[in-house]
Image (cartoon, rainbow, N blue to C red; front, top):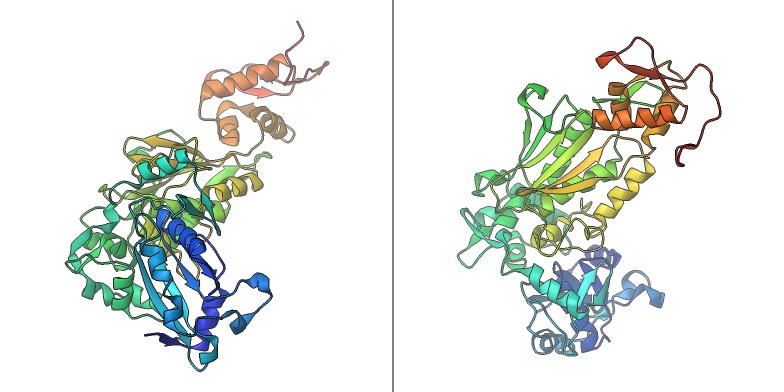
Length: 476
């Protein structure tokens, strides 16, 4: 039986743009077309598509795009398409919707495709994958890689003995989320539809991460965000470098991300950074870059590892350490070209918020690189360390070290190794010495007389002869 929704709810559905988790199809769409979109969603993070909505390219607007079936029986082909024609059958739920007061618009089938541990093929033998607002056919190697990365199951699907489905339905965060969710859905129906509870009626880890008021109280693993400020540029922060007590952020994922970003931004803006003119100014990262890194840490961390996300703020960098190494076939080398979601339910449901933190799914790290470049900061670096994945955002400008040194000397008489390291983001004293020696050999610098050891300094030479380009070898 179809569910009647308001005209406003219908317009909200019609207003959705096709993305990694949503698509719409005409009532005239054939089974092969539905197979492709269903396979693509099931092979990725799951998703929803509506059958009975005309494409914007037709020129139709508003409610005119809602051109559904006259009767539910007219959409009987949808069920066998998802069960018989796709191998193996995709996990799905179909809900029929009609607009209250507009029976002439017909019935639309809202199809929810669950994430799947299997790799699905169409009747034609195609393995499809959803990427952004489109779906593509994988080649044989890509299909094998997808199967390897799928694994048997994810820890986010485990049931929790300390949180029942009934308790989850009462959580304030879930009720607040559903208040803005279209079409309007009862908490228990939502939990059942999205499989946020196991067969024993226990809420899953994913549901607790997203909606529990205090996830660490019901998840038997650490899952907070710890924020610490170290007043040093050394590779490893020590207790004596700590500025105050580290801050712990606990709560539903959406709130946790926003609160962590607020605190981190506040701390970062209190960290002084040296400009090329020698002035000390507050450190500033592109907010989009910082947000993407924190969001990725929350949605892609391994919740089976009992550890918190650690955000460490140093004098010359910010490190975000996320529990768990890269999943599946992911490597540091293919981070920008491949994608595997360890926690597909968390990723998907976080994206359903009105202003989702993971708005551009699959584009996050590319955004980080682009924004750091726009801010003329060096690109981020990554490393797998033990049982965690680390992202490092440095304060250092994009210019080469020797250029920054010479720019500094335009307004200062001399420069020391420590000032140059702070200015350029160079961690090694010896590396900085090599920069000075190369500048000296090129005739750009000379040692300041009578200054040695930790007081050693460099300056522009008093009388300058013909200088050679630093990108060329010096004359013999």
